[in-house]
Length: 141
Image (cartoon, rainbow, N blue to C red; front, top):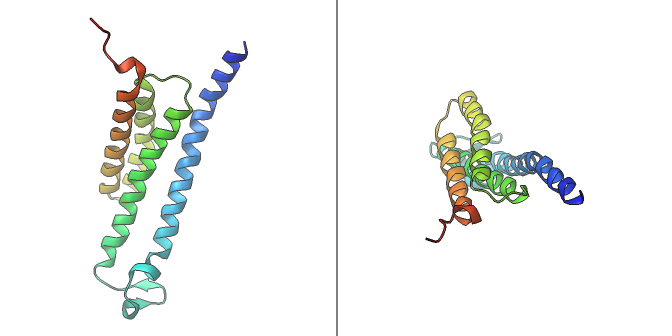
């Protein structure tokens, strides 16, 4: 009975783990996005906290893409580690569910590159975890 309760609690903690790690990584990305003009902009191009350099848009895009990819990777990883079942379908299910808000945010931002990188990072994490799952190995003949 106790094992069933613990297993149920772990399944209930999967969305919480995914949400909290996503909120943390997005917060770190937002902090980097906020501080980027002061860290990556030449002093003579910084006007009232805004960077006027032509190359600075690439820095912001890189921060956005790295944040999206890292968030997708750690969400799949945290959800898979929290889940009580080590089956190859678990990381792929978390990845598939995570694509929905990623696609929505990509649509709102009108920028597909962070979505593509998030999808690639999440899929690579799911593939890596699938390879490590005990059920993924073929049976000995």
